[in-house]
Length: 280
Image (cartoon, rainbow, N blue to C red; front, side):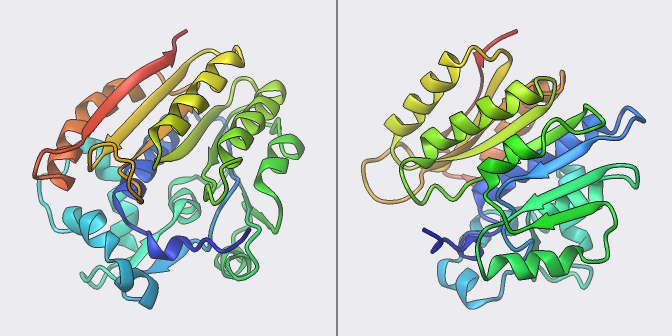
């Protein structure tokens, strides 16, 4: 199934969480001079027009990046992420939202490498066009889970692997666990950041149990909910599972999440959490 288009959801509360975490991990990796490798398994098209028919139809960005755009009290933990958003909207009007590949492109250094895969027939050409002049980048139309076998380990033995499937089908919740296992066998020192939506809470609980059963250590869960759990249709929360997180990521999220929850959910409903699924 390839019907999912992220353009309907670009810049929403889930993107704000995902890309905040992504940016903080990248900045931590940059603290050492040695180059590192960035792999994005489900890259999307890269850049999203927030005034497009898709974005305007849902209006989700207005309750995500739209609520942060003009604030002058942003915490330090958002500085790197928001610098990329500002760079794509230099006119002062919020028109574009950068997906994870473009966030990586701006934050990575000349010595770092970018590997992007996307299977969607209409998204892939747009992604390829974005990166055609970037010598650090390799863009392939490929199955993201297979890249966790074929592209790891990287020569630098340092890296971030972002796994962000559309979860169009229920088996994606099992596929991500298998994919992480495959990648971890090859590259146990890498940082893995898995995004997940909370639509049915039981699916997330099952996925976490399956991750625990892999025997992998240092698994951190970060979650932000904008609504209480529900059995009705629609995403109520989203989260990031980070394997081998940078040592300060947990504290950064303990600082950021209360602020972010207050900014995105002024009613105070929902919740946020930072939790070790499996510690050291």
